[in-house]
Image (cartoon, rainbow, N blue to C red):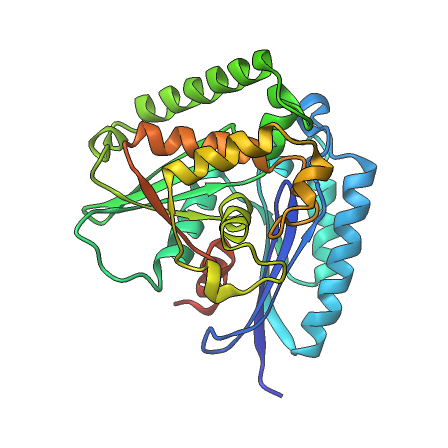
Amino acid sequence: MTESVAALDCGSNSTRLLIADGDGRTLQREMRITRLSQDVDATSTLSEAGLARTFAVLEDYRIAMDRFNVVRGLLVATSAVRDASNGGYFLERSEKISGVESRVLSGREEASLSYLGATRGLEPDSHPTMVLDIGGGSTEMAVQVGGELFSFSMQLGCVRVTERTLGRGIVQESSDAATRAMIESELDRAFSQVPVFQSMIGHVRLVGVAGTVATLAQLEAGITQYDRDKVHHRIITLDSVKQWRDRLSHESPSERLARPGMVRGREDVLHSGLYVLAAVMERLALDHLLSSEDDILDGIVATVLGA
């Protein structure tokens, strides 16, 4: 049997797997909502419930990896594990279960791998490409200029924003104001620490990856079953982002879940991710972005294969 490689991404809200053959062709791609970051923002500790959910999924993924004769791979952990006092324990157990190297990515490493994965299949553009990765605990912005990658990791993610300011239910006026202020403060920090971002305003192609953008694309398409062709490289306008943000903010999680395209496990946090997405687009003076199903997993596979 041909040897394969695997990329595993233990994010704040989901745990994902990509198995590819030796040429980088996708053999299996999976996503499960595990909410590893549950209460991490408040306690700085990965909860027993979040750990149990994630370890159970990793056990399932190891079975899938065995079916494809995976011999090499990399498991990465991001914001939730970066912020947790028991992150070392998580990595040790994860490596034992998955059978592949496990490590925590810095915000810069996360942005770099997301950029690599999202841009590999893109057509050239007259503007630089910025990759925006809205995760559960953090949001990475990355752009390459003159062969150099500039990036920043903001302490913003759909789970973190939900837990800190916005709440899971119908958004109140005070929560809306607090959320907007928090996001604008983080954007100020990003643009201050990475001055090249300022020169991107109105002159960049924005590519959005990860759950917030992917779920929004499904909602727009109104599809109940995932169809990569209908969401990958879909153009999403700022007007649409704001309309969905406001629509979902006035609904309960159960009402959101009833919408065709909503992914179970994202109904209580998607609106928070859309607050971040709209704010980034407005700061960059962009009226649309491109969604991408190629993301950090593809970047990890390329790295493992030495591409």
